[in-house]
Length: 66
Image 1 (cartoon, rainbow, N blue to C red):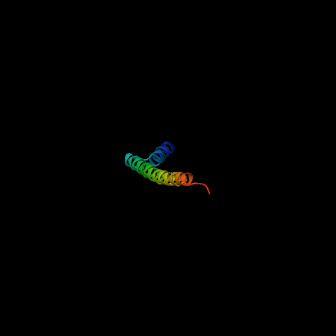
Image 2: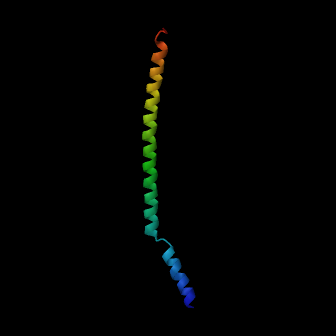
């Protein structure tokens, strides 16, 4: 009967508690939220750069060719 008790104890140690699972879930949500914010910030910077390049191109096309 001892080997069965050992297996039960091992399973209990391996199984994360509800609190641990909740902390993991919260941590994962925070990581996703941070990544999303970084992506939005990068997208904004890239959009602004693209707009600047487009405006420079338009000015170049409007100037008379020499």
